[in-house]
Length: 242
Figure 1 (cartoon, helix red, strand yellow):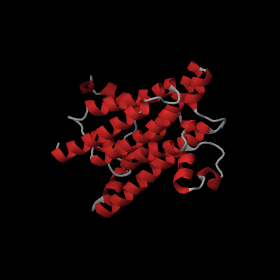
Figure 2 (tube, one colour):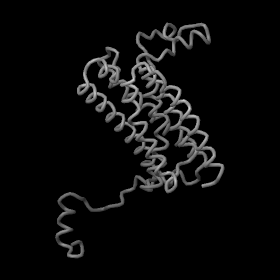
Figure 3 (cartoon, rainbow, N blue to C red):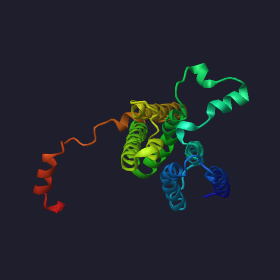
């Protein structure tokens, strides 16, 4: 990698490390903070361990960085208690919640939306560089994986809340009494990913000369024969497959 790329990633890492340390000091709920950081630590270990052999673009690292910065704010206060409305009132002199008619803390909604918006492109980069996906699939599969991982996270939250119970379980779950909380979170993550992929497709359609050709080719039928039981029979009939 170029020195400029390495320096850029190092700056992002240092800024995040500073925020992480500052927000690790006296969080509202230490146990919930620890739970919220389990996935963060796992992701950072993955990014660090793959940096030499599989470095991402600066765009992807920046998007991941922004999401992690937002997530750490939620982890410090717990998502249901992030005082964004107080910050807005102090800075601009008006209540965002009152202006928009919010009856709950919506910081968690913002971060779920940002998960889709900010992670879809890095996921797309991984799909393209590893699976060599092209055309339609280069936009659909990142959207699909973002949606499925959002669903998996909601299941993890539900499982943790059931296992831990009490105030810690409810703090981690963060439904704030909304029975449709998980559905809304998944919908917002999906919307964010859809917007990210539409914007990416629009940019590529303007810059990539063979955009339409690649898109059409990706939807062309490549395998003329059906799979399933027909594929099994072909395996059995072909000694070379054994």
